Image (tube, rainbow, N blue to C red; front, side):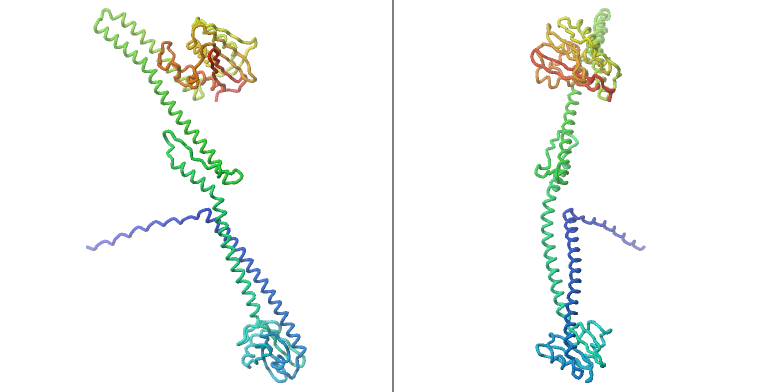
Length: 496
């Protein structure tokens, strides 16, 4: 039995290539472009300078040739011609005359060195045609030469070394290369400093965003204090505007988180209050039910009166619990923008009816109606607006002592209609006024419910006002308390 070949090891996953940072990309781009531009400038400068130096060399050669031509003797050799003149060092002269082919060059001050026949043949073999050309003179170097034919079958070749041109051009290119390299190094340092300073606000923005991203924001009370420092936010720059936008976003998020926390706390309080409100009638129903059952088992003959009283109490607590559930359902529907049947409502007539309904239930109070002769018409749900007025009057009747004067007035204020309920009672405590329109809010912390209310009247009134596009507010000082219902006098459909 042969052993199976070992399974090939899995190929390791390719490591992702590290990406350059923004600072690195900017530096590489800027330095690369500048280096390319400087290189092109250096090449162009070298080419132009080379042509200029070549032109100068050709001019120098022409001057030297003209001098030699003037002094040319048909019977002389190349060495004789150079010895009789003052030619520059390195000047090469080859002559074809009556005495044959000869060549020589100026090797130093007043020094002339003859070229061998092989060297002359080598030089002549490199010449393509008459005119200017560049040849390599053995033992001397590259020369720019000029070949000229003379009358009588004579011709000569004269040349000057190209080494000075090459050396000058090399020095210039070396200098340009060194200066370019040094300039690029300085440019790199300067760009690094400038970009680092310019991107510092962006790094601050990134650090701030990272700190916020690391915070647990899903639940619980969150204090979002991280912000981009004010000295890093300059709205005149792009990065500054990013920092400002991030600060604005964080401010909105912080407000949203605070609102969420308040809503959670309000919901917990609401659940606790609703549970408390429902527990009382449920406990009463259970107690009276057990009392009736016990009476029926223990005293069947005398259980009728006890059972009747218990059923009456059970009925009363059921009505109370029904009212509470209906109020909660109404608030939920108002929050969803439902429960409104919009029509034309005369606010003056509504106030008259509300006061007429309140007088029999509060005979110990003094009720005053102050309205103008003209109707004040709004667009809204007549039944719900009547509920607002009834709740405000019930609140005044319940919490103001006997003998209090309650004044209901309807008026106009610019484009709004106002329904004011004023009383001269003791007023509302400031601590209570801040949460007066909250659900299950009441001044009686003991939750005594002799009046049978649910603690939702004012919150329902405000919800109805807001559903109509209006507001409900209160101003209170000792002896002067006013609830103000403000509605648009001629709104469009107020439903969302």
